[in-house]
Image (cartoon, rainbow, N blue to C red; front, side, top):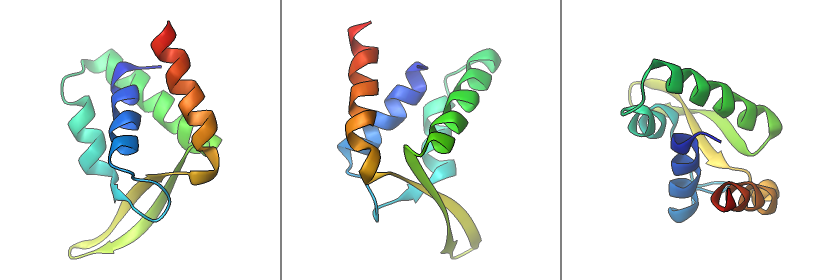
Length: 92
């Protein structure tokens, strides 16, 4: 797992972005990939899309003051698996 993706997941867990509580996708993703080079960004995007497709995160279009933006939150049904995934990465 990419270190930026792990940091994204940990920050969402620490701020309880689970289920109904969400954050703009562009805001949190840009804050985590700001320091990465081109190859690391491609790896991050690939792993991020895989987590979305596996159902670990929920992406919804939400109405904002300037139109519609994608917002993300962690899937409450997938939390035990997500915590195992993060713990496995820490033990490596």
